[in-house]
Image (cartoon, rainbow, N blue to C red; front, side):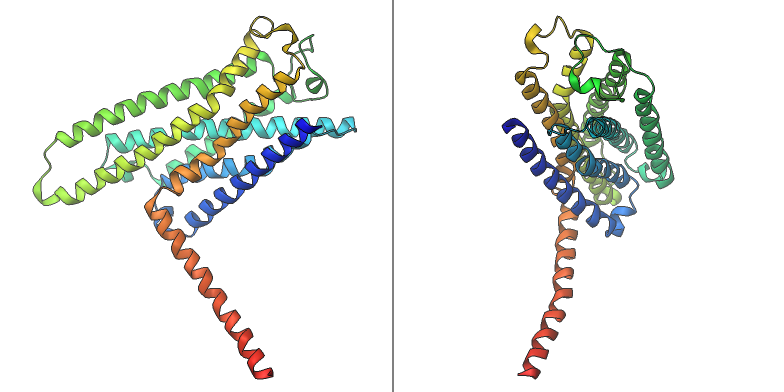
Length: 322
């Protein structure tokens, strides 16, 4: 009972922070024409939306799934709802980071022609394809599941959504592990490219314009690299744990590990780290972006000014009445 209360409290705080931060970022970007004119911004918006959905659906369902619900039907609904929404948001986020890396790689290779290659239509097609791909794959466990065995816990027995070992392993390797390797390789090339760019002499008349573009590209790339590092650090333990749990549940863990409190603690810590990844894009990209902060301050001032006349009119009415 105490363990469930601690889970609910910590997850509730994380959900609240994630909703507030992601909403602020989405609101500011939606009301900033200059940001919306950049196709690359939509890759970040995609991550923010996935993280917002995780905070609104996955985290509350996770808390409810771990609560003491007596009705078996609703236990199953909470379990299936959590697993499906968690898979969708997790893999959209997992593939959203490589999309940002690919965009930055193109930006590095074509610093001055990037905006001609990356049109808004192409970006939207890539994001839509990502969602369709993830949704299609994540529906499969509703119709195909492994038969229960002695290592199947009580939760698995009441869930319709039971991914097979083959599905879990292939999803983790193809959609998490391999894309992250590609991210590291792309950023390695990116760093080499920027170093090479600094050594190239630029025509004097265009030096300032080109230099500013290279600096802006370099800054955005550093932010993207930081997001990717956070993704690896926060999601890495979850990926490796569930790969081991799928490949060798008998030999990789002690016999008394199944259904133990220690297992619940380990899985909660791993999941909480993965859930915390929803804070990375708003904190790293938005609140460390100078243009975003300036726009946020501008919107805040506008909202304050809108409230001032209402207060003044109210005071004027009180003065007349007196």
